[in-house]
Length: 176
Ligand SMILES: [Fe+2]
Ligand SMILES: [Fe+2]
Image (cartoon, rainbow, N blue to C red):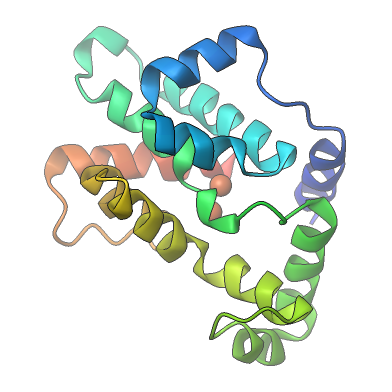
């Protein structure tokens, strides 16, 4: 739980991408994906950049790894399904509800809806699917397939290269 507390405060004080990071985002992402990235909260933008940073460190030798751009796009975009309103307070609320009112929270989060708790919990539980659908609509099929699995780690129907990208994404996500 202490990790969560740290995450909460990091989220509150999070800053958006600096100029170098903005240039990297411009290079890596097509315009619609950039829009989706920048529509996340600053906390989620910073989280995604940190995931990218950690994933890059996990890749020992970038020249050996031909899918580095794919991996980086997945890092930047894996949580876009959390949407523009999932600030630190809402995220913390979802974590607490999931922990202490698990079955109620799961039931509430089953279908999408505008109501306060329903929206938070639906996005909390289903953002990999939402992110994936958004990516598919942008024509980013490979990214969609990998991001869909970033909480389950299910590698069925992924190529070896895609499984490696998923593994690195999940390890990097875990430490951020
Ligand atoms: Fe996620
Ligand atoms: Fe994440």
